[in-house]
Amino acid sequence: MMNHLYLFALGTFLFFTGCQSLPAQNITAAKDLKNQNIIYFNPEVFPDIDEIKEPTYTAFYAAVSEKTQYFRNYNMLRVDSYMPYDAVDVDSVVEYCKNNNAQLAVIPKVKYFKVGVGKYVFSNQVIISMKLYDSLGNFLAETNYDTYRKNARILGSAENSIKIGATGAMTNLGKNLRKSKTYSISGAN
Image 1 (cartoon, rainbow, N blue to C red):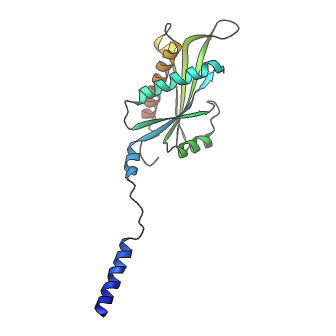
Image 2: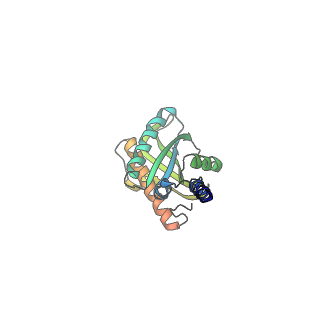
Image 3: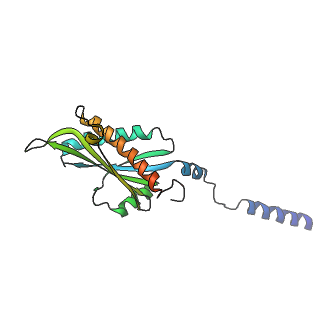
C-alpha cells in the first residue's frame, strides 16, 4: 500500500512538473529575423495643394511596392499619416515602428517643379527625397533623386516621373546604407 502511495505521489509530481507553464516557442521569431518590416509614411508634397496629394500618394506607393516586390525579406507597410520631412518627430517614428513591428521607417518628400508665372503650372519633373530611420529613432541615411538631372526627362507624365524618382531614391538609399555600414539588417537592431 505504501509503495503504491509513493508511486502515485512520484507520478503526480512528475505529471505536474512536466505540465508547468513554459514559455511557448515563438515559431515566428526566426521568421521575423529574416523578414524586415519597413514603414513608409505619406510623402510631404510641395506645393501643398490638396488636388495633387492623392495622385502623388498613389504613384509613390505604386513605385515603392514595385521596387520592394523583388526583395522577399522586406515587407512594405503603408502608414496613412503625415510626417513633416524637415522636422521629423523621432518619438512618433519610434512609436510607429513599435506598433507596426517595423525595423525601419522612411520619411519621403515629393517636390514638383513650378513652371510659369503666377499660379502653379506643374511640369513633369519632380525631386523625391527620403530619410531613413531605424526602430530606435536613429537617423541612418538621406537621399534625393531629381528626375530632370538624372534622366533629363522632358516628356512623360508626372506619375511616371514619381515612379522613376521613387525607384531612384530607393536605389540611392540602399547604396548610401551599404557605403556607410551604419545599419546591419539583423535581429539586434
